[in-house]
Length: 143
Image (cartoon, rainbow, N blue to C red):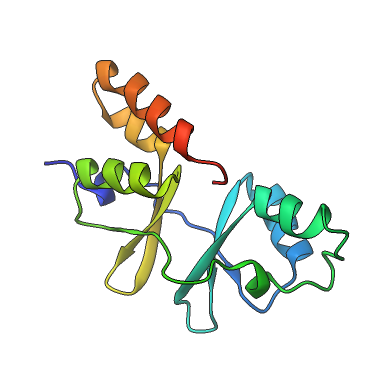
């Protein structure tokens, strides 16, 4: 059985919750990320921020990205993640259920990677890829 850790992207950038939205946007640009996990000073996952969050919650509202803290954009409640040893089928169901295209991969409390729709598509038989992308894309408004 293929696990999340087998196909995830192990290099994961993240942003400290005390930094500004502008700093997050610059990191996204530098590293070509569309989403960053938000962690606290201990490296614990607190939420995620997407490029869309920055546009909708900051720029479109006329807020100053240099003064808005990234913690203000962290999702309230539990962050949607996948365990490193969870199956690809579980990852697919989690993405569908929550309407997300990317999942932080955790091992215990440690953030160890990111699992994207593209990672899963590369690991699936070709016949399933179209259905996966269509299903997740129809439900994923923001990430």
